[in-house]
Image (tube, rainbow, N blue to C red; front, side, top):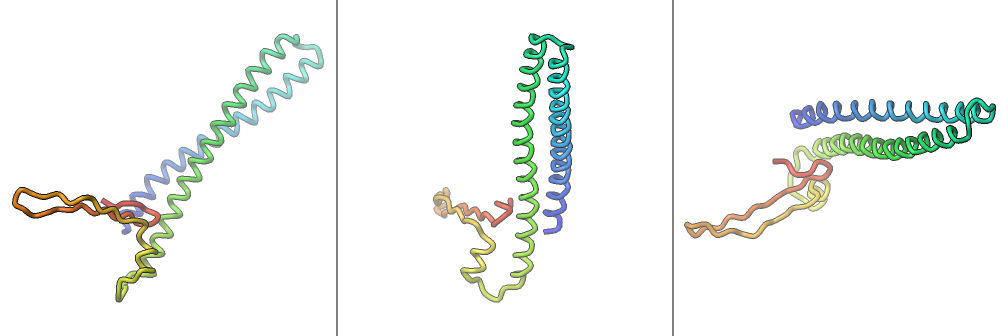
Amino acid sequence: MKKLLNAGDRESGAIRKKQENDLKRAEKRRAELDNLFTRLYEDWVAGRITEYNFNMLSAKYQDEQAQLDEQLNGLKAKLNETRQTSTDAEKWISYIRETAYPTELTAPLLNTLIEKIVVHDAVKMEDGTKEQEIEIYYRFIGKIE
């Protein structure tokens, strides 16, 4: 269990750190664009740039702002998903601790730990025996190979 969590923590920690850095960079650029747009408007009002240049740069900045807004939404969603995965693993561990030494297999215990069980069709082997694959998907962590 610890190996599973440690491997997942290292991997998700690196991914989360990269996502947080990407998010900070995008937020910083978005703030820079807001400042650039403000200065551009002030330059236009003061007559330091032409209306043509204002419109051209304004459109460029607005396009970049829209792209950054889309990127920020995607990054925030991915970061939340990564955080949720860690939270789900922690929940699963707490469920396991609660039910570490069950005396009997009960329906509530199964419902707590197992999300779904997939039973595949039986395959008849050459020697006449049958094999049937069963996949168990655990709550919060999925299928463990």
